[in-house]
Image (tube, rainbow, N blue to C red; front, side, top):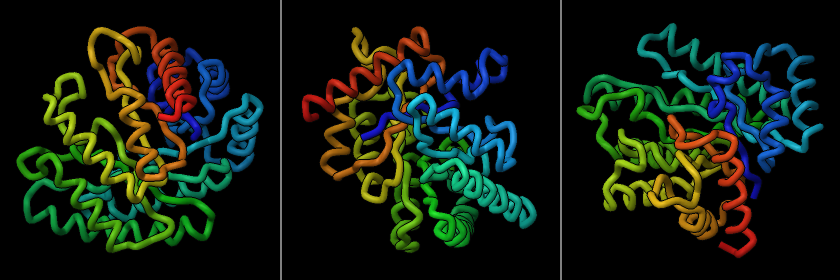
Length: 282
């Protein structure tokens, strides 16, 4: 299993020009990562020469490119926005193919009413069918992350509904190209440290359920893996779920910001903890 880090974790440093993507690749390699997940908006260009060079920069540091994340596309509320979002997903699919990335991560669309929920499910299905066919022709997969709670309100989108919608979509699509990207902290509208024991177990159950169709997976981390307070699921809990489902894909780490401690130290110690757990057969 390859351990990946999302460039989203270091958005603030990239925006402040503390380092560019190749510089970040160097730091991630030193932290022990096997691969990197790149936010689409962190790419400086979609020019083929730029993308091929970026792929070489990652490879020179021993990193694969686990995924491209087409974040903040909501499969918009009107026809023009909807078609624009589909075009953007196809752009990231093209970029992923050039970068040698197997997966593009997308979200389901948002809605603002109960009647809008049913309509959005139909729009999501149509968009995933179209983009999935485009991706298949280019040797890329689409992975749908459970992330919709950040785009909708609880009044119309209670915890657990997105998992039901994702299961319905996966069964309806029955596609070798479109799968899920289970995330360990996107079930409730509060971060893991603030969840009750029952909510933590429900979150882990959703993660486990969505692993059935997983093409990539996200683990949220907030602090050092060993501490006096439980800031995230333990490596043993996550790896047990992955092993039970036979998951062998990349495992991407994302921060629950603000991180408790130095970012690189937290990342490095988390990677090391997962390596130890993997070596012990967890």
